[in-house]
Figure 1 (cartoon, rainbow, N blue to C red):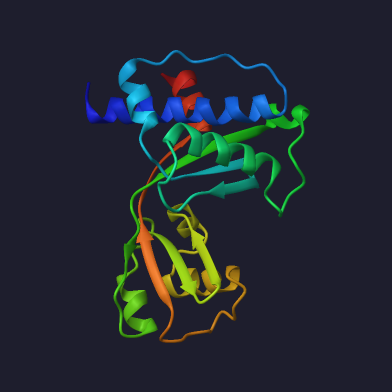
Figure 2 (cartoon, rainbow, N blue to C red):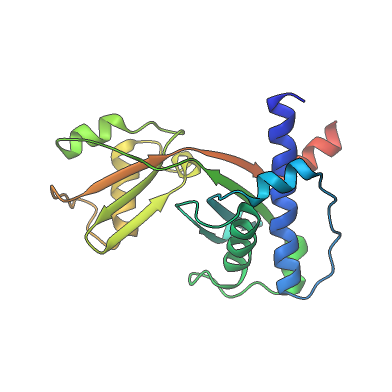
Length: 199
């Protein structure tokens, strides 16, 4: 099996687990996917994920983990339910909304701390469309997935909004600021639907 096919299969499994977890939380029936022993071993290893829900092209919930502490199967299940029911920006998802909601799962790499002498230096190290970024300053913390670069393509804009998300001024800077980056493997339900239609 090639790496591309394996990644594709992993994506299908994670998306299935995420939707199944949401369905269980909402007490809606859902088909259980059969998995081989290799997939069960992979899912038992620690993993960090973000689960993003969209509805009619708009964000409907997004919750995730930055560090791999729990087994991957538990992490994606818990984040899926939290994205559906516990994202404070949205009302909890209702069962009758399920058909209009699309699920996306992002599997994170390990965090890589950045070393920089200034904000300009930090900005020069960011890789648009590749890096997810974690901003930290004292009790303030925020992150953007790499997907956010689609709406904020300039590093300066990306970092400014990241600071705003952490509830700091967009022009804030201090030598105590810490930045880390990570990459993701991501899968969207809508891509698999298109694959079935056009395949």
